[in-house]
Image 1: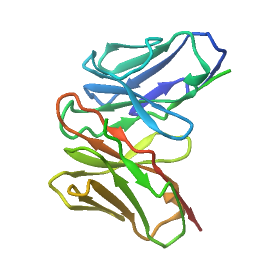
Image 2: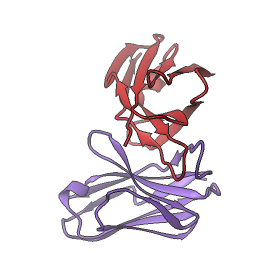
Image 3: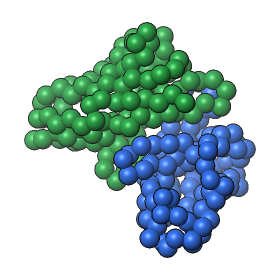
Length: 114
Length: 112
């Protein structure tokens, strides 16, 4: 069983569209994250949720809206997609909120905006 | 915000050789971690070293941490073609709702 699974793996869409990426973890972790990896492989934290509560919201445009229906799921909805949103989005989870946060990552969702 | 910076950006070696990657960061940390990313895949945690530790080993991996210089190194001994990947250091301040801050990575190519 995949520990952190994301769908879809690939997403190609037009500018202006709205799309969602789903993430589920079966590790029983309390904390989940969304990271964005750009074309130069730089990884940047976008959001972090602890037990369904938003705890980290970096300077991300409000076109990005995360939703956590329960602590095993963290979805990412993006409105009015722009060319600059093209990237690989990684979901991750960790068992603790503070201290040694060791992350388990999903395989990534590659978003291409045309 | 603090950010790890790895160097070199890219490293090409032959199988059997050792590979050393370095990471520098800017602010105080609780721990530093190294992750590997194979092409087209997610990151996989390799090793964690706490701020009060100087060296740690795991199999063919050796990590050092020098908090006075705010730097860490990852040594992979007797490299294999399967070690070809990007390697990232990540710093954790360990306070409040901290998250990992990743560097830009070192791309390692191990040729048979």
